[in-house]
Image 1 (cartoon, rainbow, N blue to C red):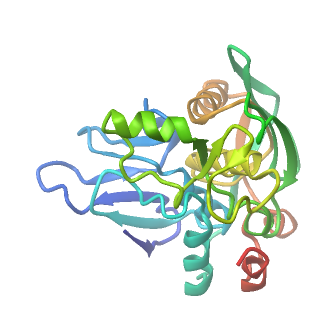
Image 2: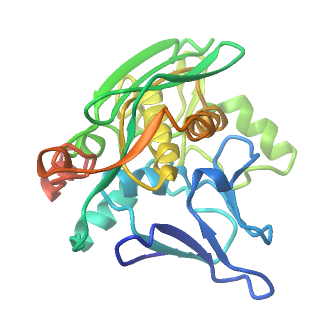
Length: 283
């Protein structure tokens, strides 16, 4: 997979270099998300798909990148170590090219909420992007976790980007027995066995599970195509619920507006001012 620079207003696009008999370009947009288990999958009008986009999308948004062409030779983005850290490191080491264009953002004007059983996702007005997430799992090593972050000025890089996806040992065994997730292992996820962390080296953060859910949320929100000025609250929310929330926002013209950011607001956007020393915190 290769991430290539793009001009202003290009947006984020995936290009399936292995597809020859259909349109290989897939826009990284909320309205191109399709049903998938345990990940975010995008599709174009020809049915060409790319899955597990959330970690690289979070890395792009967390570094303030909203214009890029991602070339990939298969249907799934590499999961690497289960976090966004390696993507962020590659972007920071390559450097950033400011574009001669104003910064735009999606401003949330009123609260919008979606529910599914006991899961809730909500966006409400705020001066910059905030993420507030709560999870609850019947696993002793996870239990109830809650974290809230202002995502300005490299917060994603310092606080979230190295947090890995997680699962149960029994889940891996079940999926492997059914021929699924054959590449999944303790090398690209935090694996729990109730009270025990199976993964070598243990956790990177005591609350790594909720941090990863926040990482996922940023990646899914990045499918807006611009930074969000608003507070995202997730309670047991997942990929599909966050996408349903974006559908609800865009279905109500009074809930949002696109704005040009002045210099003060632009400095508060996720990724503004990200530098190598931010990454050193998690290296």
